[in-house]
Image (cartoon, rainbow, N blue to C red; front, side, top):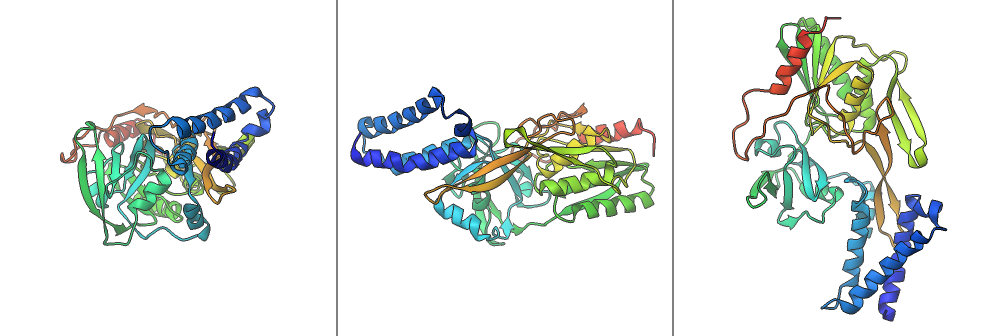
Length: 388
């Protein structure tokens, strides 16, 4: 190995070891031979690239790719951040106010969790499950969710180009969207049938629980004795905001369990004054239900407070924090995850609906369906329940 390469390997070793320490790996198994073996293999790979690759390798680029690979192997929300990105996080600067109404995860490319009702992406036909192959012609194959979210945002009125794959990878669709200011919370309500109130929670924010409570009060005045709470394609908001909605319905019991490194668990339980809403309820879920809405749905079904109607949820229930590395770079790392009230994994596992109903597949550009089989099944299910 050349002296330059050895220096580069040594310079990258600190972040690698720091990454392992953060994960608790080296703290438990430093004495085991396989720990040293992994680091030796890493050293060998860099040496082989430097000495055998057909061109002079850009070792800095190789090392950056290795760091991205380490983080990407964890979960979609963990990411390796460059020194410039770390400074951006630490500055506390807010995201640009304009967006297109998309929440993202990662599966080979960036992938759509949900397209916000009545916002640019949804109006253009984007749906949960669509792959984003490029943003402004920049490939997303090596782009983290953290980077993708920021690439989509900008000043309201500015434009962003997105290349979408749905079904056939050989038939991409390029759409140009105009950014808009996205709302902090969106809750609407209507009567969905005789005695059945329907509450749509499209965006979860600090005031969502109060808005849900207000909508239910209005629907009750209109004769609602049963409720449908729709959290399909709702993937934003904090965990605490999802728990706040659950507290409206669950008067006692465990709402969720937070699990940290090493298996340490904290039980989050209902408190005095919770459970003011007692009407029979069903919750609509799909593969776009994640984060705060998934925590809410888990608390409801876990306490036998509601049936879940729809599709299996995505399993995105963890909390992240920034961990700095010695060279100024950092890891945006999932450091705790949430379990169901029964203690079953939720993060990366998701929730199985009580009554499975698939949303129909739609070809890109085709008109939206005129029926809603998940809502129809929910109304049918509620007809079997007695009013409170």
